[in-house]
Image: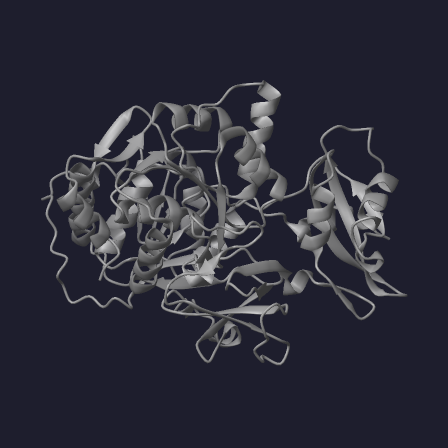
Length: 509
């Protein structure tokens, strides 16, 4: 089955229902399906074929969704690219993937000229908005002079690649994660089943569409369940609060940093928010501070359920059931997804023991693009090795305690940065923190904490150290605290510890 068929099925079942709210515009399922079919037919006329690699470098907007389903419909492979990427980063993706087509906004036209010179493989450029030129194809042209029907019953295999998501490189260059149509359909259906999305739901689309979490949680699952998508092009807390109230949103999917930022915005502006329509907040992409969960529950009687999974698993592998969540856990595996915890010798560990989380199931990627070596390193006997350290409790709930690469070895003792961060973050004057391991002649490594406080000049280093010593074993406690104005994050709001180390390594000596 082709992933775009979920839109076709929804358009048959809910033709006049609003599929997308785009500010003051409402797009019905029938109109969305018709536009997608027109684009699909016109792309075929431009000689776009099954397996062609097509980059979409757009913000969260209606054109992204239309192009996503149209390209999928004709068997193209989609590579979403962060619009904030620099030329060097984009060149790497274009060269590595041998992309044939790129779709960009008109405000990137000068950058496009430079990219075309460096990438002769690009044969077609599609420009959005109102830019017209003989050199480029305008997206509006793709919705004209074409029939609004499309035959999906061509010879199409469900294991054909649907999208390629480039992961953010930590120690190496980014790798292209190949996800098939069957990967996405499986993950989408199981997420809807677990969270119980329905056709009455209205989803706030604040997560970036260039990320697998954004695509799955705010495009595919809403369409699959017949819900409505409320577009927000960029994170803007004022617009977000307004759209939740005015559109009566029911589902908010976000990363922890967005949820934290939203609370701070509400406090700083001293505004009252109408979140009565929301029935669920889903947090993923990183550990959620328990205090954030408490605040949403106390203020708005809202439960935040956590879920997670790497891009390589489409991306969701586990999520809490809304009626039985466990705080601090990323939940239970999706149905038909298997999880095991292994030690350094790849041997399965018993319940409660910490080791590497491995995942097996129909959501596991097809491999890395043009990188068989990395594929074989990551997938062994059909088990994907995540690089996440975690444990499973007696009820089957999964708890992530950190990344293998972030593990701190103090003497012979394993220290998990997230445990120290949880402790520090519970301090009343701490906004957020990050802990890294630094080389030490005596112990091998020691933990160093970077702390961002709510109010300056009322909390000092000794306050934080003593707070930790009262709550953690001595070997786990940070040996130094560095107060910072900001903690660097990547595009998904995850703390970037590599950048943190580079920015402050002169203070670590």
